[in-house]
Image (cartoon, rainbow, N blue to C red; front, side, top):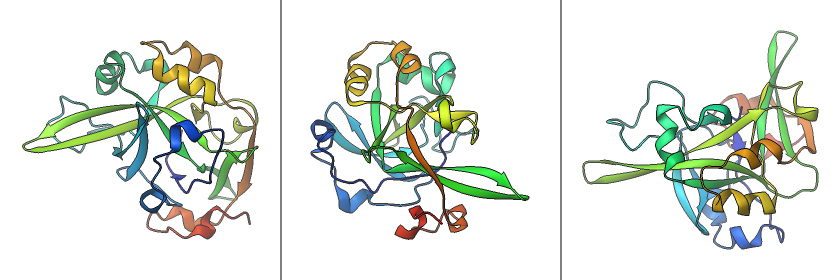
Length: 211
């Protein structure tokens, strides 16, 4: 799964076509948690959205269940996500890396995961929009799949992370999740970080430094 990440991106030539509008000053964060406003790419433009999808039919912002992750196996059938899926409301959610936890000596030890080549991690996502009176809320979810390779020992689930070519295909395809099942990144740097990241109020740059 993915419950925390860093949106402090580095310049990237590989992802330039998607990230020309990325506003560093708004989204340079090191401990992003659900319900935060995050940067999301839709149709070549960057939007600020709530992380944790609120479906268009919802009567309230708060949902009874967590919607910051969506299992790829059920995105077309789960009530919270199927409208976004059927409406082809796909998005890209870029990150410097994300956090995962592992039980060690009776405590949860956080790890930070980044791409091996230093490029941003780009998660496949869905977004939706709903109205509350005169206000409009845009929100999103990160799609997850079964963990692969070196990440299997940390958690059974991982975000679907796309290459540049797969990102193009994801945004252009119609109700086709096969490319998410077959592709994605598999090479990562994984290292232990300070337990201060366990506190969602902590935002220091040092949170992503190895210990």
